[in-house]
Image (cartoon, rainbow over all chains, first blue to last red; front, top):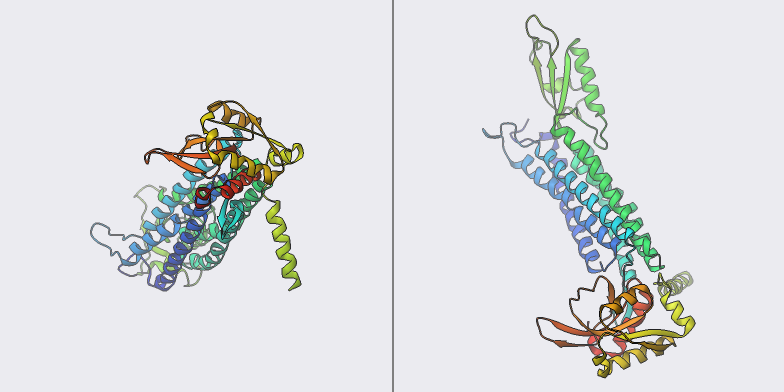
Length: 311
Length: 148
């Protein structure tokens, strides 16, 4: 185990993930500027623009957490290092997504209820009057492309690093075409004279943001309150952790096993049993070969209280 | 090559298809060959841009302007109701009505630096084809509007 919070095996994939996230931020900024230039009065465009801006939160939180994990050393004030900064970043990203998703949905429903008709006028380009909606459609199509490629590249790195923040971002990027399609439909619908299409598309996009936020919130709070380790892509219990639990139960029959997650690492407590006679590294107990054994950072033994079993 | 030309023709045709008006203002004007217009302030009747704008819209739509009387906020309500198609007046550059009606580009500017007034047309919100027609006409008759 290194002096920082990051296991040595993860240095190379982490460096690749950091580079990718800088590219992610760069491409997201180009999308924000492109969309911002053609926003107009459209509710769909405003919602899609805010969604794109929110897309900066996960990579920025990931980079902050990665910097702490890679460079900040354990100290007297932080004896466990900064392995939970990633979990904190995940929580912050989840709160931002949920709050903004709810606000956007509220705005879209209010606009729909008030039967607001969005005005989208024209601008002059090279002496030609162009309907701004065409530029909105072009901006929406452009906004679909970078996230598709970035999401594809993020996914294997997120799995290698067991990084929920990166994984959530990868899934959001991969699913971006859905919200992009809703945005396109909204603008084309508006052009066809269906005033409601704009607000309905905005509501669909905001529902997607809210759904991402709630899923991330459930998973991140589970970690912060020492819940059992959760799977990368859902709020279900992690299969790795379940296998580890079975392995420890087989090794220490009758013991109570408690697992929790600190960032990408798992810490295990084996209650009501004495530690084995020989000295073993925690990785010894990892059930599925060596490739992800770095995840098990600690195995503690809590012997039974004399004259009493159970805890 | 032929496919590219066909695609380009289709795209050009599509360009002209959109936008349409939710309440069908442009279709009604084309069908009835008349549109309604009012001045927010009767004093601006003397401004040459007003008549030039109305004539340009008449030329582009092939419809005759039907002048209505009225003043102030009541005209915006008539725009919103669809009983009036166009209101021309001097409005603040940062008008508090900007979300309630659609303003065209300014035909001329007066007033102070702190509170500039713009002579411009206001249309019903969301009637995007009609809004575009008025915007095009405004740019055709005013250098100020073209530079906006």
